[in-house]
Length: 219
Length: 278
Image (tube, rainbow over all chains, first blue to last red; front, side, top):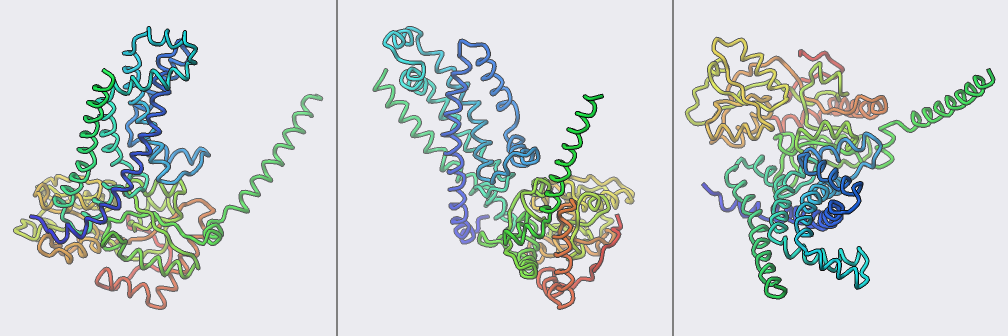
């Protein structure tokens, strides 16, 4: 069933494209996290306008399938005069915007779990709302929502398999191209599945370690 | 009255400005000049369409790469390929992500309305490919009452449907996002045959004689494969340059040599604009 020499020959190609998948995933996670913190705090803002703005963001970017968002960013925006971005930029923008929407909801849950008394105390100590966000709310929210955040990271890495629609040769696209030329569909796609596990299993493991570490340290 | 004249003055001014701007755009809008200026012809394609485009050890191979290398030489520019899933290729052309599309795709009347085709490079008549081992299909008519696959949105699919309608028993036609999925389905026995253009399936069957074989003769009407560009006026110059490069390759035998190398035989294809059969 397996053609081992062929499998070994294909391995370096998949390793190269693994880098592409990792690059866009890491970039999208970082940007998505910042968007998530901002939108998540907008959703909890005392001002109704800001609350609605955050809600609208989540409505749009959580509501539309990522595949459609990617196609829209890459093919439609240039038609209405916006810059004709490269496949890499389009992929990172698309993934970040979507990840931002999910992370915003996760962070909102985390923010809500922080006792109000802490924020009052911080206010009395003279911290600005920005300082409160960075020093008090985000660190605690991350600790409280770590399992959900790790979950989201894994989902994002898997969702990055959609970026080939904008012309990026990620892990999935490369495996498809290989399968289309050697016709070893089962072997090539099993190998592809293996590569995603290779990223996600350690991620889940270190997520668990970090969780335990934070618990011992702060709880 | 005064207001009127003021308005018309302004309006005239606006018209002049718009005309000037329009003239400027018209002067710039020449795709051939743009390509020569950048020194690069960008070609959108899908690297999953053997023998035209496929990968070997991660490198692009096939007739497109070699033919475009020659076209690039004639134009005096480098050629850069972009690989996208087929459903993204034509939208990409329209969004100006690349200059032309390789494919190639079958020239049909409907497609000619929307895109500007370069002169054809190969014949594209549709035939059937079946599993090499114990296939119940030995002539095209045998697919009556069976399940057959073809690429979604492809001209080959339409050809299959037209042929199926002439058969006594209903054919269950399955549509696949790309041809390779359909080829894979022959292995799972979910379908008994795949309809695709003869050059493609001949190549696949020749590469994997243990898995696939072609059912002769082809059942479709005579049709042709060609590269294509945008239909906008600014694209005319580029297509015209590619056409004359293609004619030159007809004359000096380069096209015939590439056909022989990749498609197994020389093919008689139109050397001027032609009316597609469908």
